[in-house]
Length: 463
Image 1 (spheres, rainbow, N blue to C red):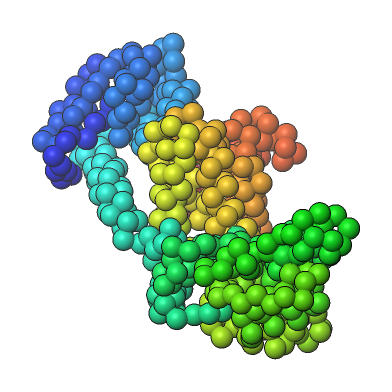
Image 2 (image 1 turned 180 degrees about the vertical axis):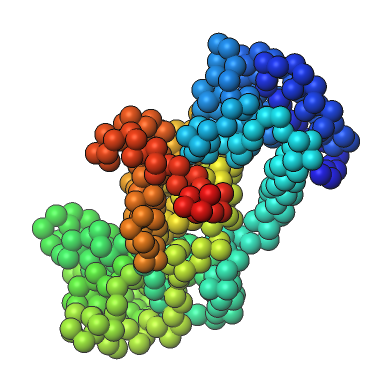
């Protein structure tokens, strides 16, 4: 075990046997490690909250407050703490229970000094690596921000490169991609990097306007042009003259308006509804859609000539599922924003919560991730977001995704995995798990024993 750092890493040992604590202190004390010990589990719980140890060595059987209950308290308060349970009486049942509740390890006392150093050293080295990774990720996040868009995956770097190259020159552009991928951010980046970056950037959502108002909203109208037109009104194109108009969800624009938009793009002029006067304009137009415009052209619901006019430059924004290597950067980006917004100190996301997030398919893309983390930041009570802070549908979706991706398994392995999932869902309560599975507790213990044997790397049939 070799640990070095400018500030020591804190290890807390809680055991009602002072002799065991003395052995632990002697085994682990070295430069770079501070070892705290206590024989009182309630005092240990206080030290956890006050001192924030990286690793806790916890005796299983203690008076007043048992190790399993204290384990639950610690991980509920800060799931980022690594806990090793120690016991003088090993049992498969308690070992599986401890691991399922979040313990990192389960060792039988007396633990040989070499083994204790090896197990604790591995956890401490992992802690050091996480600290270094956080510092590096902070630097990497700054380097990976492009016009308020975060990404370093090859697909996003290609998007950034395209924006850089075309922004000084484009007059029209088409951005495609599923809902929630950040198409408006890309449009804003095009505007920001264009020669008219100080002019207006005006947004028009084609899916949010009734068909009869499209022309008036885009091109304006004169007094008396239709019922309710009590005064002259400037349209969006005239308002954004010299700047950029962003037409979101262009696939929802009616055909009649599409033909008028095409004329604007070709002639650079508009007519207010009810007026014969022609007004010259100079605007850049960025359109976006999550629909298949080629299919709409075949169905004659989108004009082919308008499509070709808009798509002189086409930028495809990838799904989040296709750029999952960007997830750690996106976590940090959103956590920073929401921690500031909600005035909370949030250190990060627990490893088990990150596992749930990384396995999820993200059908709503980056917008859904933003909403999930915003909700989690509001609900989290400590300084570490855990699985319990995530929405239930997301947790269930992760389980279903994992099940769908499972390989073809023997029936016994399917039984084992399903039993462990149910046990986790009922918080480790074996009585409830047996009832939910409609099996006896004896059968449940048999399955858990086989699970423990599998986790130790050998078959229970071959002891």
